[in-house]
Image (cartoon, rainbow, N blue to C red; front, side, top):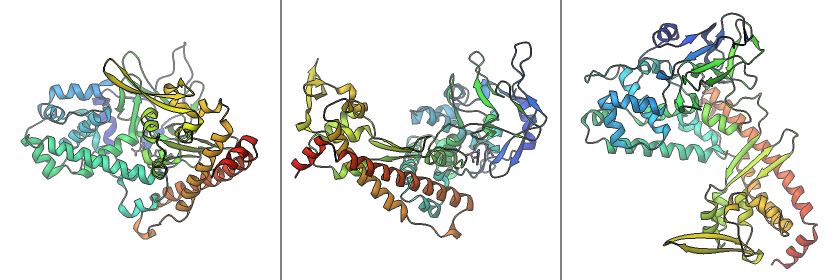
Length: 462
Ligand SMILES: C[S@@+](CC[C@H](N)C(=O)[O-])C[C@H]1O[C@@H](n2cnc3c(N)ncnc32)[C@H](O)[C@@H]1O
């Protein structure tokens, strides 16, 4: 479904009509970044009479799409209310997405609004949202092959499966509502749901007083690690403002940027925003340990450990500011400790409720499960456990490195240039992190192998 047309030339009038204040900025095309805000004059943030300089943008709360606005909209719009009640959305994200989907329908030239639903501010504004959002959930099959063996491969597959499940559930639950049945069988497609999700991921803000929200106009600010501006939400009016940091200035023609997040891994940037900032020093990756756990099927405590750990077993690898390889995998430490070391599990019954406890040499350490790596470090089995963990990790990292090195490539003719560049950048960053971590892990294992407790342990092991 196509959204209605809305050009940037019409934006100033839209802003006037909806109470958005713009000071000294205009929207322009910024090379390689789509639209962005550009200073129209020299701007500075000098404080006058202790009052901060005028914000660059002020966006009133009543056009910020948060759960509160969505719930209010449902009280004013019978068709939207039917959708919200039939589907029983559970998350902030789903509420905001359903509102965006409704605005897409209302704005679209592909749909005749016979129910004569009045337009909202976003009915027009949604037309300014880019059709091509560069996040991987919008990539073609051939482009997705470029992510083979990177840390994003399984994350993107899981996200696509979730989006398909969500859309199928919306269709199934609204089957008895003629308005939505017609829309969801003839007009709105899974692709539209994927699009609104891509918009939300790449353009939403986590506001302190409104939660996850789409903020018109602020969503036109591009990212830079050397950002020239920042945003805040006013605790009283809940308006969102874009400001220059105290004592800073921007010359006419310069881009006004914000920082989407410091030290975010390249994979997270690509997944959420569809680009990797090459000027960011962040070098890290997160891998799921699920596959390794499948291979560790002979641990009699595995199920109990996973239940008490109660989080996804992950491995984070990173290169710190000093260039040192670091890794963290709290579950792996738990996995590498057994009954003979002093670990035990016990089922307790209290007021008819059963719960499981984890014991270390007789002491209840259930609450330590998520930071088991820190806990075990203070115990006299530290070196032996660390040796086991490092040995397992070496296998995981080596396997991942082999995979990423011969990961399948798509024919360059089938993929967009920007997507190819971003995927190659991700592969190169992740290969580098894996290589450096592998080297560091080998060094750590060799050092641990000389420890007398480790020597005794390895001599004893079959
Ligand atoms: C919040 S929007 C910013 C406005 C957007 N450029 C537009 O045309 O509407 C975020 C999107 O802008 C693009 N973007 C922002 N900063 C970028 C940067 N530093 N490099 C490349 N693309 C960037 C990405 O496509 C990202 O998903």
